[in-house]
Every structure is written in structure tokens, then in C-alpha cells.
Image 1 (cartoon, one colour):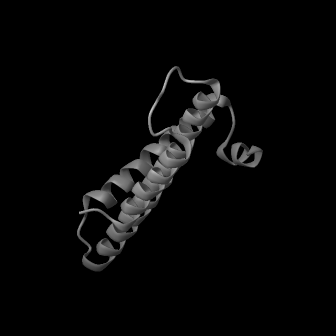
Image 2 (image 1 turned 60 degrees about the vertical axis):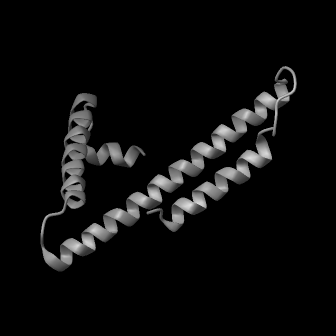
Length: 109
């Protein structure tokens, strides 16, 4: 079953195709058309990335709410916790390897 957000993504991609890509190719691709092709890829990538971020947020919030209600471990919540642990460990290793503490590294950003 497709989500409303997926339908929105398909609509946006179709709009980008209409705006940037030719309906048919006649002859060799010009530099201008090549630029339009690259523009399409850039904007389509941004739309897909935004879609994945939105859906990830929706799924994780729904799983967190469900976990709060029934206190049963769900794969989404367990995956989020595992990712958080791995991310923290990698961040600690990076800070140690670079000779910075977490606090000073954050302040630099």
C-alpha cells in the first residue's frame, strides 16, 4: 500500500521530468540538454532523499508510539537503538583517533 507521501514523490518526479527532460531525442544531445539532464538528476535525488527522510521519521515515530503503548520490542525501535549505539561508538573512536574530546569536536562545528 502506497503512502500519500509516496504519491507526492511520484507527482514531483513527473513534474521534474516534464520540466527538464525532452519528450523524445532527435539527434545528438546538446550541452544545454546535458545540463538539463544533470539538473533533473540533482532535483530528483533531492526529492527522493526528502521522501526517505520523511518516511523514516513517520515509521520511527509510529513504532516509538506503539512501543510506548504496549511495551513490546518492535524491529524498528530495536534497529534505532542499535544504530544509536553504533553511531556513538564510531563517534567516540573518531574523536580518540583525532585527539579531540567530543566536547571540543562539537564546539568546532
